[in-house]
Image (tube, rainbow, N blue to C red; front, side):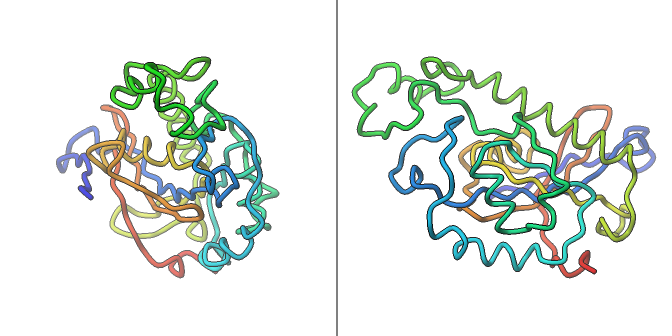
Length: 236
């Protein structure tokens, strides 16, 4: 994976106006549709029966974590993931439909085998940025709402301020840490649009997995890179 970050030169005014947060991005646990290899966008299946066991490692990672904010997709599989992995945080979580997976329209619930003979589907596979699923969401619309929700999170968290207990302290001072429960496509889009990966398909996060993106908002827009650190440094 190629990791990039748009750095501002020392003394540059952009650096002074920048705002930085860490997004801990968690992909929801496995659903029966994932097992059947069905497209699952805005459809709302719950987690599979083994989800509690599957999410145990995530629960241990998040245990005791103190976050500046907690956000979640409003779809059932994300809400259930948060309840199983961090039940104490679920109470204060903000649910936002902008964190939903891409809307696959008429293809929701279908498999590749069911769709592979359709010309529109074949065109979408080859050129997803130019072709929209019937009754679904265009790539531009998907990208726009993901970008918008990142901006909203950055604005709200930095406006509210953060204590040392809800952030990571380093060279940039105390960086707010925000937990986000969302979907595989959203995580891929965030990473690629922020410059943490070269392309959408460069990143794959398994169900119940997570990555952390350090996001910087400056005069030139949003940029970021993937970071890692032991969660023990901000648990109390």
